[in-house]
Amino acid sequence: MGRKLIIAMAILSFTLAGTTFAAVENVKVSGDINTEAVTRDLGFGSGDESSDQYLFSQIRVRLDADLTEGVSVVVRLLNERVWGQANDGYADDTSLELDLGYVELKEFIYEPLTLIVGRQDLRYGNALIIGDPDTNRYVADYWNTNTTFADLSTRKSFDAVRGVLDFAPWTVDLIFAKVEENTANVKDDVTVIGANAAYDWSSYNGVTEAYFYSVNNSPDSNNTTSAADSKDKVYVLGSRAQADLNDNLTLGLEGAWQMGDYQVSTSDHRHLNAFAVQVMAEYRLLDEKNTRLGMNYTYLSGDNGKDVDSAYNGWDPLFEDQSPGEIINILFDNTNMQYWKLSASTMPREDITVGIDYIYARLAQNSTSGTIGNTSYTATDNFSNISVNEGDKAIGHEIDLSAVYDYTEDVQLKLVSGWLIPGNLFADANDNVGYSIRGGINVNF
Image (cartoon, rainbow, N blue to C red; front, side):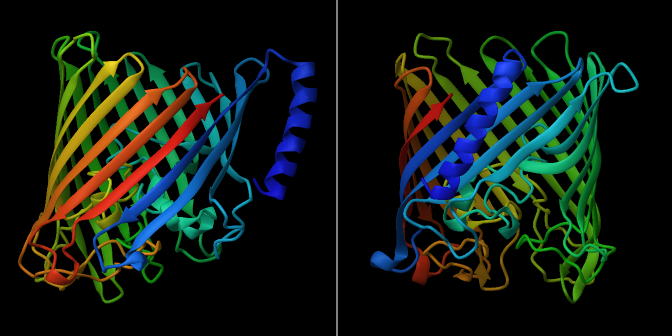
């Protein structure tokens, strides 16, 4: 642990000692430490230079304080770093960053209203639209996080103002989030204004949601802001429903439509007309081993770029926090894709859980550029221009395996692995089997 981090933690501990002595019932300290060893080869190139091996840590310390009646504050500090790197070229890896920092005012002016102001987590439904400010496969430079394990980052918070209206069984969230300020005196910010209305059923453990979001200057597929046109705006209208039909079966459905003006590139500004559909099911055997079977189908519309005079049909990932698969999530943006995901998990012992996911993925629209892929990943593998066979759609088959051992109720040992067998989409130069293997320990306190 770096010197700066040790000093900061010492100061924090000293401060807490005085605070808890003064009001021990009003302050709660919690956190977690996650440490993993990773080896990855995503199937491009050959030899040692094409694979990554490293260890990393994620450390979070959280303070919850109840002040006067109905007023509380939350602060959480975070450090994410690769072992042995004092500086990754972007930021000091021993620094602590503000991950959460907000005040919550209950019964604010109006009894059903709760107001939450500051850096906070925003997540709605299955996080198809809102869940991670830079998507779960990327970390923006302003977070000062090592991008080697960007897809595994725990950073999910937004700078936002949120009003929660509790009209049980209805709950309405009204949000304003400033995702990126960029230049203070230029209209190049990334902002979100929206509403999410949820209805909790009185039976079947069911919920129905309807939402609308307006995103100004939304990030493009490379997670960069289009400052060239301040009129770039995406509107999202969608709905989700999920319910337990009985003790064994849960079904869920979500659909969303995107419209507005979209800056595809500097020279390509078009009307947006895109949609997404997700269907999920989980079947529980209700046996002693807690065996579960799952299914997920996702369709995210795409645009092949053939007709630049028509509307742009590519789904904008916006602020999603979803993962089709361990490796597919690294290689591809959450757009222009359809995939089928089958899952199973069981507990051979009461302290061990094992699982398997099978994913088959295809493009929604044929690629016409000859290259495709995640242009933001900056680990050893450089696949910003993955060569593909134009006209083919098959991304491939992925198998992910996981095992979690509950060493104690606070300590977990885990092993996660994934293999991608590339489909016909990939050109011969980079159609090798890709893999990712991670093992580590997680402690909650």
